Length: 422
Image 1 (cartoon, rainbow, N blue to C red):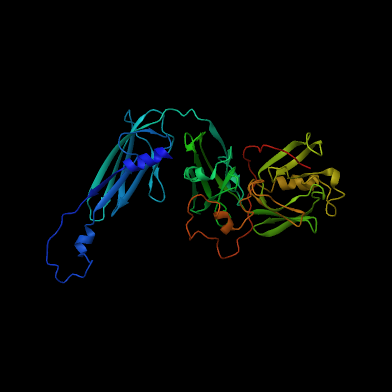
Image 2 (image 1 turned 180 degrees about the horizontal axis):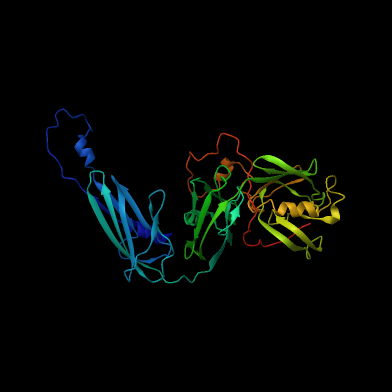
C-alpha cells in the first residue's frame, strides 16, 4: 500500500557510531578488523511509523529493525499518557498492540536498543492514526470459539466475504496470530479463491494443548477498496484423540480412540446420483436436532433429523436415519450424508467432538477444496504452498507415524451457513 511505502521511506535510522581507533596495520590481513573493532560495530535502529506520520491505520505496529544489537525496551503511550499494551512479533520485526488503536488519536513510541558493544540508543516517534474508515468492510468469521475442547484435527479457520485477493493476502495473514502452549508451531494456508484461511501444525495437535487465536483485522486496509471488520480473540484446548474412518467398500464406520478401534458401525451413504465425498474432513458442528430443507434444489425435501454432525459446507452430515436402518451396512440410499441408526448416532454424539478427523474413502467423488475445513485433505507440502508468507523450512511433519486425531465431547463453533443433508 502507498501509505505503508511512504512510512517506510520516512523511517529514521539511528546509528550509534563507535570511536575510530588508530594503530599499526602493517600486519593486518586485507579486509580484517581487530576484535575490539568488530565488537564495537555500529548499532543501527530503524523505527516505524516515521516521526510525525499521519493517516496511519489503526492496525499500526511499532516496527523495529536492529543491526549489531537488540531491542531492550518499547513503550507506547496515547495522547493522554495512557500505556498501550503490546507484544513483540516472534521474528522481532515489531511490537503489536494487543487491541486496535483508536481513530484520529496521536501515539508515541519510545524504542531502546542495546548494541553488541553495550552502547544504547533510544528513538521516539509520534504518529497520528487515520479517521474511522468509510470504505466497505470485508466480513470475517473466526471458526474457533473460546473456552471449548476441540479435536486434534481442528484447524483454526477464518472465512472472508468477499474473498481476499492474492495481492492482499500477505497483509491479512500478518494480522492472524496463533499461540500454542506447549509450543507446537504451524502455518497458515489459503483456499485458492481466498474465501478461507486455515492454520494447522504439520502433525495433529497434541491432547491438552492450549491454543490462543487473534484475528486482528479491524481497520486493516485490504486492497484499495476495503478494510477489515473486527478484532477477534479466542482461547481453547485440545482433548483426547478420536477419529472416524468410513469405507464405502464395506459400508462400515470404524471409531478409533488413541488409534485403537473401539466400535464398528454400519452405514448407508450417498446413492450414485447424490454421492458422499471421499476425503479427509473435520466435524464442524453438532446438533441434537435440526431440519434439512432443500426446497429450491433439484431434489427438494424437508426432513427433521436427530444427532447430526456437519462435515461440509455443502451439507454432508453424519446423522441418525431410522428410515434407512435396513440399508445400513449394504446399500447407499442417502442424498450424500452418512446414515447410522438412532442408537449409534446418539452414542457418537457422546464420543466425538468438533475438530475430529473423519476420513471417507471409496465413493464416486472427491472432496472439493474449501467444502468444509479441508486443511487435512492435502499433504503438508501442498498445504504450505497456500501460505502468503514464507514458512520456516524446518517446519515438517514428524518422521514417526502420528496417532489418529480426536477429542472429547464439548461445544461447537458458530453454525455453518447452509444445510443440505440427506
